[in-house]
Image (cartoon, rainbow, N blue to C red; front, side):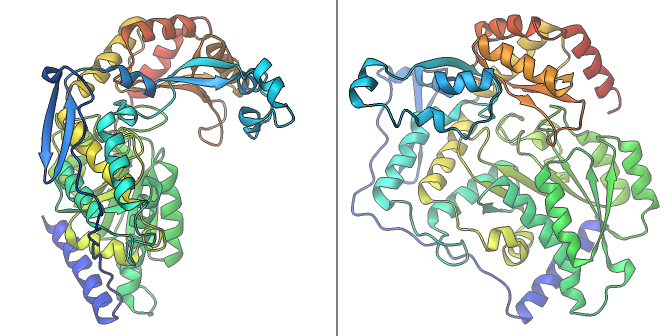
Length: 490
């Protein structure tokens, strides 16, 4: 494709320029030594017929074919009674009440122990319930026991190890990309890519004033994540970008903006699954526009990775367009149940971003135990396909119970004012559900909402109880109508 040749050539020129300036940065993984021999992960269940083991080198990753007792700990939580009361009364808090009682004597503490309120969590992003998986916990423990937290430093200095490289390779394979670059967070990943984009033509201009036609045009969805927005704002400081915001998922508007733009170097960036509205980017239409306008397609798949697609490859796999997404941003802090971010891309793009992406260059690499846990999570998420089946069953169940036409595990129940959202959240809290009110600046004024997030380890009984509580504070019919109107514009 002509545009891809344009971008490939542009990146190669930028890399050649960095090489000539001796600014090209290299990742050189350190292999960590251990005083202890590798230990196989212990069997967490007495019934071996219910589990399967996959070997990767010296490691054994144990996976299971259905929900286990420990899975529920990812959705069942408790809250100190004092914290619960401050939330109910909507009182300001720094969180100290959870550990307070500093003036209480030992005898008084024994006489009046701290009271707790049990809650069912419907506000997290642990979509597959992997944060409590024993295979992932064992990977953390084993790496920590053998290496502590690992070398502390940025990836370009001494923080990049064989653990990090193994994780990058597994993510590149998952996303069907040539390579992958780990970042401290998903936020940092988007920042690094946007800044690298802003830097690329400024670098090639070598100090001279950029010609207007040399600039890059970036087209960003109006509801893209804050990390994309902030990354673009920072990249604009290089004065090498023209930024266009298209109406949310409106392909007619995007097509119009693309058609009017005279710049040759175009980039379209979008969330794959939008975190606050729970709707998908129109991937099929985006691919058609990509073929028409020859732009670089960047997708932030933070909420779709591991959740969507047969293998958990994300939104692009779900819509059968992995080859049409040029760069995929992802996170390990949601469905993977761990922490960190990544950029799946070509080897050249990786080298450019690791040389120009400031949030990558100047951040300490993720600790070795986290990298080990995330690698285990990739294996488990891919193998335990029942988790994806279950979460999509819960989406269907919620629709059946409420009639609301949802399309993903992210359910946005818009109630309007801040007071209405807070009242609804407090009602759910009293009913035993942890569901927070989402208010400005996260969402626009008068579009405050309850954001309900489903998990593979929620049960039908959980949903029945939740929807019963919800029915006392919101009108399902009204919510369903609002969502239908919103989706009609896709």
